[in-house]
Amino acid sequence: MPKSMIQRPWLTSIIVAALVLGAWSSGSAQEGLFNVADLDRLSPLIIVGAISGGADGQLSLAVDRVIKGPASIGPILNVAWTPMQVSGCDTTAPTSLIHAIWFLEKTSDGTIKFAPFMNSQLCHHPSNPDYVTPAGPLNGGLSYGSSDTARYKLAVELASALVNSTTMPVAVQHYPGIFGGLNTTQAESVAQVLEGSSNEDVRMIGQISLIRSGSPAGLELLASSSIELEQTPLAGTGSNSGNSGATYKSQLAEAISNIHNTAASSVAVLAQVATSKGQDIQVRRAASRALRNLHTAQAVVAAAPLIDDPDPLISTYALSTLACFANAVPVLDDTVSGHKVDLNRQGPFKSKDTLAHFVLGSMGSEAQQTKAYWQQWWASHQSSIQQAAEGALPQ
Image 1: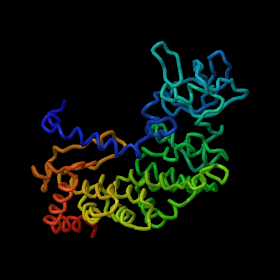
Image 2: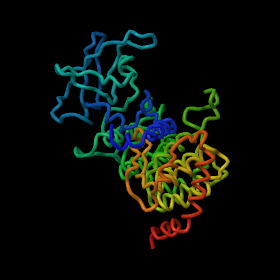
Image 3: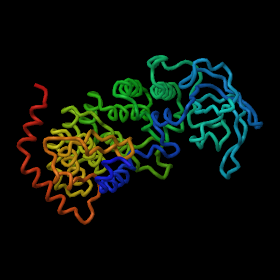
Image 4: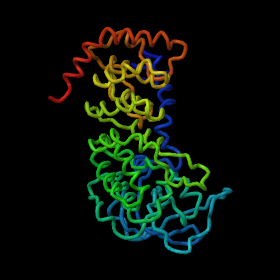
């Protein structure tokens, strides 16, 4: 166990609380909720191509493109497949070639099999894959090179499938946040192509992805259209679906919570959303959470008024913003388990008292005492932090 954990046993409960609070925005470990970064991390071999074969368990995969794996992979791969004998699994052999993105692994004896993390590939015969794509070249507005990361290549392949086909891959229907895990430049390039689609649902995925990127264009979109986006009906929720009231507010909230751009312009937009009384509470919470994750001087100034917000979660995020700033905690990342909270860094505002009152999650019976401490701390340090925030603004 690290020395810092031995010295501070209370940090364990803080991290547990952070994991609980972060579950809603980092639930991509569930089947159907993987983003491209998860898929890259979990699959050692990712191939675009068409599968054919019968029920003998030996499928033939004609390789179009290698997203991840050795460049020397031949044009045809034999993929071993053993049907799962589980109720609900469809083991019917395909009647024609099925073109899709396939997630594979190579065992120690050289056999190529479906990656075990992808239940849909193991349960069902590859006749109706979650990552089906149209055969042929990539969309003209999308491309990648051999030196690009596997997650970016995968994002390009999925984006191309969205704009080249009238049928959205099942995986994207399940999780419109599938384009998470890209850097700002990559996310923005993919999102802008999706935004140009003639399909309204694809355009929405592009806009949500653009906001998640935290790019200037994404922040501008968030500032101008957040209420409109959160009220847009979710794809596939027509009047006969039984879920006609569903909107993109959850997807928007998740995208906002993953903004890691610490620029003053980013903080200003997040503050606008967090403090807007006309905004859905789920979206306001996400913006407050993002301010907590950034906790720059500008974020502290923006979050401080939210300490008295009537919503207890927003109030907690505001207190945590101050606590993280005072204790010199690095920027938090909701996609990392436990956020990698580091309380060992030095900072000008850090003291034994700020450590003793550090808060990241539920405060339990100490809520009032902790809130009172940080209110007093803010009153004592408000002037200097505001000066620091103003000094960091571009001239």
